[in-house]
Image (cartoon, rainbow, N blue to C red; front, side, top):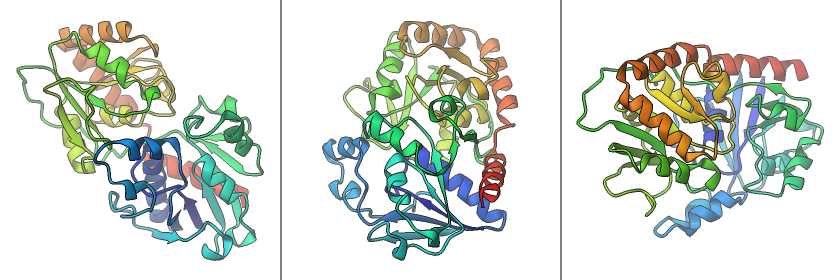
Length: 341
């Protein structure tokens, strides 16, 4: 098949990572995959936040410079002036990957084949609920990345996120003077960073954080911060941790959870998106309700104080996550698209 994935912009996000991971496996399965984006970004609240950060390169999110050089993608990439049919290659299927791209894909003609919509969140941080949900009702074949999304979207197949088990794997453990607690840093409130920092604050630990944003004043002094680490470096970072914390309020993933589980790290996470599925309802992680930093703090303190329990949770998490690979996600994605043609 000739498959095109349409991105709003080519920079790193969890959703774009999922597209490239699945696209890579589709290439390996013999398909011709092209990832397309417009020369100028389709604006979103995330872009406005990034441009407001002092010292952030403003051109990064007004013109799409740099492409997807942050990921070794074996397929084709294409930057176009506009997302118009005449600027895109002939395809058997074209995949919208966010609500903004769904509006554009809906206008494409028969040269781009069957219209597929890979829905990865209820994206109300970058558009009104009415506008986002209107794209769900357009004549797409719908695929959602989480069981949480399916009842919201309606008629859709579920393809949960996977993890690269070749990259994210356990390694030798080192003894640290202070327990190393990991956290994805983000500026969107729904990512729950404020809750995680409130939970970690009373604890005597070494906070280790990473993200695409410059570190803000909300990170406590002494935080070890890695800005947009390469994937191999991120894998090493996970392996250095004693616990990884994810405190999102709402989320399809978060993708950091299976990466940490695959790395043999004990995870403490809020019960959002695929977390319950990945962990078999809390067998392979400590799962707590969102919006409750006090509960999160107690759960984190408990596992930090109990090394044997921490090791058991990490081992069970590593065992369970073996069932969720990008290869399986790509195979299911392939079945759905082929069945729609």
